[in-house]
Length: 237
Image (cartoon, rainbow, N blue to C red; front, side):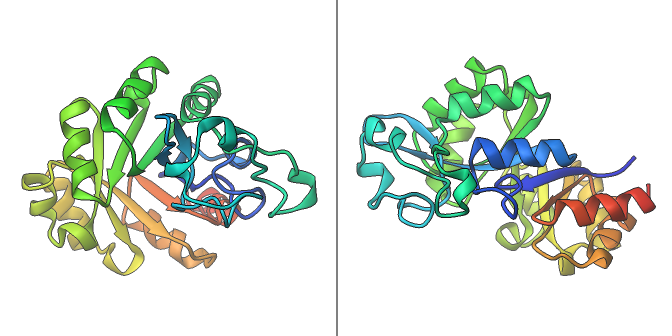
């Protein structure tokens, strides 16, 4: 059985990242899970956006956290990428998750900064709690989410935990994410012994990277180059 493929911000090489268009393109290609980032507007609406500001990926400017949802909804999140994506929107999280559920996909949710209770409620309301797992760099977000959604599976980077046993005992993680150089047989065996699932992460387009992940039997691959991975994994089922 091949690893499940996580499209990092959707198919962000062929469509504007963290949009419906990128998510649907990734799922059409064969992704299983969409990785997405969550931030909160000034009036408490959760959005799928990576950066703290809207400057890079929309036609607007400013901090999303200081903007009203009506103004965020009016932004164009596609024109910057290519003319054919003109009119793409910054997705509201609930609608984005509804789309993933309708398509039978999972979600890898990274909390950038938002109310963990609101996030937990949205996952429950969209029936995506059991089809999702989450990660937060900020300790405040991780602690808040653990309280708000103790039933939600969580991931931790090995670069943050530093040790597989700490990932479980200190961070209470269910999944550990490894970069290519970290993803050795010894580390994967230790993760299995600790009861952790394993994600291999790479931004590379090199086929050997995906073969290496397959050879170490990771559970998931978090990637940008989905088509390369699918070709390699098709050759190495």
